Image (cartoon, rainbow, N blue to C red; front, side, top):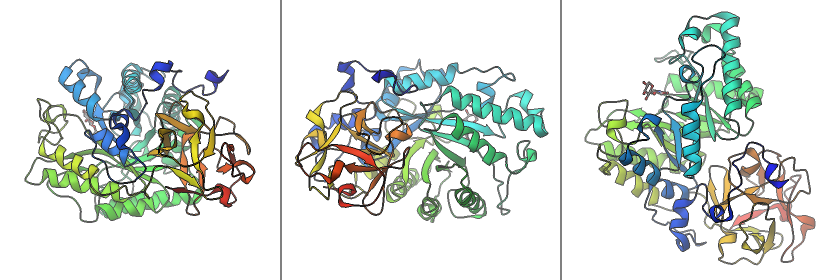
Length: 472
Ligand code: XIL
């Protein structure tokens, strides 16, 4: 039963809907402009322009605004990712111990799905916005309740979340570089890694992030986080990404990009997770600088602004990209122009040419049906050879390159509805191989064949020419 193959993936779409891509509505809107030449193309929305650079552009949302038509039209037009501003926090999701309420979060997820947006999850554990019952706990009782919370919530949303802020704001401000004192911290210094392990077990397909503020430049607090991430990577604690809230005033740290890069160099993705910037003389310039920095760091997978319009913001200093009437501010234009400027930071070309055969990765018959298998074919300019990165997903014709569940060496690679799972995430390795995040296996031309139509499979990585792919 093919439609049971991802128990947690979105339901099968009708053939008519199948050509409406989950993430590439904007990309397809520019249609033939997405060519193999690798030159920059001017998208007309934040989401479409970010997608052309292999990134997402998201907004924090609240369901209490979903009845506001101006809000919804801006949201649906501009953004290809959402995060719940409050609805997935502990106080919202577990108002009484063991009693869970997912109504707000579910509504956001279903809106995202229906509109081709990915979802960031925010947040599983945090010292703030805890329900009253948890604030009154301590010791092992609190630890158990916290880990249970992580497990329950991550399980509920399993398969629907691109990245979770597993732990939020656990480091202290100031120069100590140490942890913030909190009821959670007082359960033992290992509470963060316990949370990450529980989240991984509950939703293996979600990227797991640590998220914080005042970590946007190189300073004692960000270095404290850096040291924790380095330690987690060294000890195999599951962590995939670091979120930089970037609630900014009238300036941006001069080492903003260098800070993102030093985290990326630890082997984690980085994301700008709660961007807003004080309305001052340089609001547009700061927004542009953040965007430039993310584009310059290949592991910066996307940007989220903390609200849609100024009137939707938690701040009162008009820190967002749209005014209260939904008009684009100069900061909006600065971000869009920056996204559209320059060249793709990734090597040029959207085709993937196999070195052994000289032929290109190709969706058989240009079919968009789920389960259509990949082959190699003479390189041409058809859409079935055009692959766009969105985070670590490789999108083609509105579908995602997908290693079937339980793939083993020899399993054929296919396309399927994008759902954000690890079996749809691919890593471009330094030796030109492309490995699948779930299996660790490499994209491989079966038997090192070279003929048109030869099967593309996953196989143990060996770096041979039939496993090397170059953008063309
Ligand atoms: C804020 C929300 O925007 C407000 O609506 C709520 O009252 C308080 O929380 N860092 C975070 C976010 O990680 O969750 C916070 O969101 C803003 C600061």
